Amino acid sequence: MREKLEKIIRNAADIDDSIPVIIEVPSRSEHGHFATNVAMTLASKKRLPPKKLAELIVKNIEDKDGIIERIEIAGPGFINFWIKDRAWYKTLLEVLSSKEKYGSQDVGKGKKVIVEFVSANPTGPLHIGHARGAALGDSLSRIMDFLGYRVTREFYINDAGQQIRLLGESIYSRYKQLSEPDYPFPENGYHGEYIIELAQMISKERDLSLMSKEEAVRFCAERGKEIMLEHIKKDLEAFRVSFDSWFSEKSLYESGLLSRTLNELKNKGLLYEKDGAVWIKTSQFGDDKDRVLRKSDGQFTYFASDIAYHLDKKKRGFDQAINIWGADHHGYIPRLKAALASQGFPEDWLRVLLIQLVKLWKEGKEVKMSKRSGEFITFRELMEEVGVDAMRFVFLTKSHDSSLDFDIDLVKRQDAENPVYYVQYAHARICSILRKAKERGISFRTPDIEELTCLKLPEEMELIRNVVEFPYVLKEIALHLEPHRLTYYLTSLASVFHRYFNLGTSKPELRVVSDDPALTNARLALSEAVRVVIAKGLTLLGVSAPERM
RNA sequence: GCGCCCGUAGCUCAGCUGGAUAGAGCGUUGGACUACGAAUCCAAAGGUCGCAGGUUCGAAUCCUGCCGGGCGCACCA
Image (cartoon, rainbow, N blue to C red; front, top):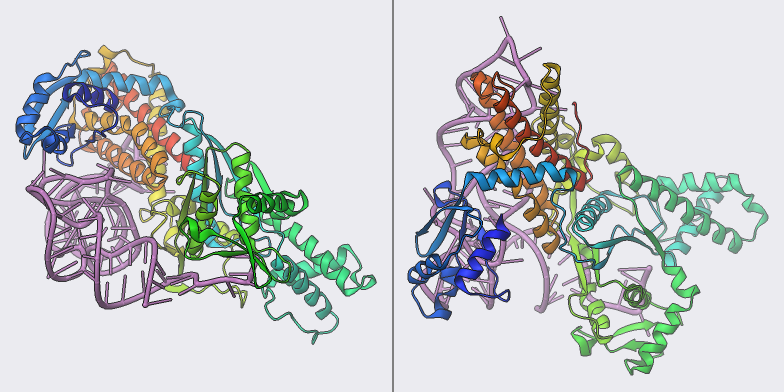
């Protein structure tokens, strides 16, 4: 519907694709079904007063398909459109014939996109911040996938650096403490309870006392990492997140990719030595200063492997990279972008979404997370306590760049306070209506357009208009990378439906299932369309759409 | 000190990249079921969009400066 209208407006105003045409749904119904402000934005360019221009545009409008009921010029120069009922019925039929494919469209045009998210260090259990990243990354991937992008979900494993070594030392120390309680614990070691469990587990698998300390630490590091990764995978699976690819940082070293990358950079004259370290000239590409790639002790920095990693993403043929990072990494973006710019990457090839902090609340108090003390609520505990549906939905009710207060008690409650049930309930309710109709011997069949003309209530027309916005909402999400818009859309659609449904509580003739067979079938069709969209929307959020609750 | 994010109803947050009288949930107050499911609906109260300038037909949205909160500014990962 929007596309049709946009074409009509573009033709009438004689503007090409270089100028965006904004079509909005006015907040007030007396301003029409759609409104555009093109006359105002174009006024200065065309050197005409907005109202005059609006009149000209309206005069030029050719409505070949006959979808427009009425046009009005209002306020400072808005052009308001009312669409014919018949055109709305037609779009409703499209929903019913497309079913769960409704909303799918080729926005991505086959573009290959890599979405990298979670990427937690395999040195400890996932926490709530990872959960937020997982919800965002996975839903975004689902949506982009649905819209014609070729999406790869990747988890980058930081398994090369010092922190894995430290994991090994921590486990080893806990192992020793089993027999010598005073055995020293590494200064920056991982304090969590899970390290002790790992120590017990690993010492059962293999007799560490037969190894040298060095051997044992390495073994603990390797096994500890493996076990942690298994836990991470299981947690994510339980959260309905699956990755297409697990990319190991270590493999960058082993495959020689890292050294090849450094050679390339060197050949391009981007590297130099100073104070015994190797530096890259990122400052020439917008970074504050140059950065070290190889430290004077010969070790590579994390930044070095990250450059190699991102060059590899490009080599693997991705047209766009989307990274989801914790906000504490924001200072890192300019240097990575600078390094990529030095290799001629387009500015927007890499898009980084930062997720702000999650503050956890329980019993009215903030739950402080401290890695050092090892006191934190893990992803898994949280998932078991509040449930996957509620967790995913709540994470996606906020924009990723605003911090979020997560109140466990509130999210746990299975009542009106929890928006996820509100939407799921609308779905279950529609399923119930369809069941009820069947029990009464009414089998719903797809109507033709004439049969839909008995949908006349303002609430019914409003429902149709809302349902039909779905493809547009998805498109905006993919373009702006903002899946949280979907939760708002679904909540609002559910709200319109609940209101519609409640009309029937006092007036039986306004129920979906009534004595009038034709009307009943049309209303069942409308309800089914709402159901289809809610079910699809929830699926794209990774939330279940129950038929009963 | 420099940089990034945030500041909207009592609380938690939206606000469709500059539009018309700023929205939702929770909370508060009052109402609607012997059932197409009340996990719902209806109504009321609640706002200087942090503050001050600027840009223009028009600003919560853009630019500048303050104020407040969070997070970063390593030859750490």
